[in-house]
Image (tube, rainbow, N blue to C red; front, side, top):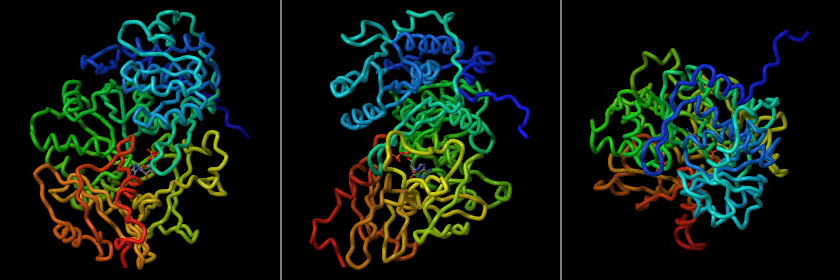
Length: 544
Ligand code: ADP
């Protein structure tokens, strides 16, 4: 027997209708390239998103058509987040930090018919445009004429009347957005998000437990809108009616801190490298900024070092919320939290849990599998590859027939992340399977060593990679960036680690460098480090 409930479609127009009806007066703030602040309301935003939909429809963009964006985080990008799907299209956010050849590959693989580009990114666009198969190129600028061959975003919007807008009947299962994995471990793969997946994730992120975003929040996503939907902030915040602040291209620690203070930001989100930069600035000049409004700094994308979480809390009274996700998961998977049984635990134990990746959010299920194919016990010790399923987990990659090995026969997604799961269902990422150090048949977690090293007072950043070894197959090598004025020798660092790790886990070698190469979304680029430090074949470094 069917339930007798309306078949209400979970779509982006439903989010926009609510935002318009209830939150038309709320504010959306953007820092423009010239550093001034642009302000308007949700009501203004909704009108312009509809106009964009109308203008795109006039250009022939319709059902399922991909429209790329090459943009920073700002209000017009937010309009595109809604306007493109409102026209029936799919917003494909392109990562402006990728190499031009990757961008060309991704835009063509996705079949982008049109592209919306920030004026400041025109040099990047100029370098790739000949390799693209676009029908329309649209420039976002603060005034002046569009370059030859391009349309002006503002002129397009001005040329239509929102009174002509009628909402399309969109099936919640149809595609609304698209994002390629950033290719940390291989060729970028396209993930195609449905309206339903986005609407449900926005709903889940608003729950207490995950992020608890609500109307009274002021949010500033540092995570780029081209990285996994800016972790759904543009959707969740619009759904709940939070004041939204976008940093534009100004992502340096001082600009961010100034925006947090000025706009009274309550929740912000970004990768650890952003927060490490902010911590250094706060440490250098404690009390320089009034951050009393900030209730949560969400960190994900790479493991958040425990020392960083502890330092923010103890030295600056700031609360770091650690989350794990993947482009393939729209992207939210787990969030660290203190369950009721931990509320009275000693601080040491609390920090231990706050620096794990946490519990799966509602409608995400987890399990992990050992190399021999057996599922791991939830004992907090046995490592295995994490598998997930849920309402917003990709069921396959776009236009890619060869990636079936990423899904199990019973339909779970194999994350490539190696974890332990404890009795509470709390996961701890030990490594990406490609980054694990396999020493003498046992696994060493590079993440655990890195996090411990980054707790040393003289260490700014540390990455641990596997080096080939005749006897042990692989041994860990630590690449370390010291803080300005900091000093530490390899012997000191090895001794520092020795208190927390088995002897065979300790890196054989430490290399001190000026900088660790990063990926387009700010993660350590370990493939580059492995190449940089790879011993020449047959050299003495392939040691025994
Ligand atoms: P890419 O796969 O190209 O790096 P994603 O942004 O989708 O792009 O990265 C997802 C991966 O990032 C996860 O599989 C995991 O390895 C890593 N990751 C994300 N969040 C965390 C976290 N909190 N702790 C450790 N690793 C994380």
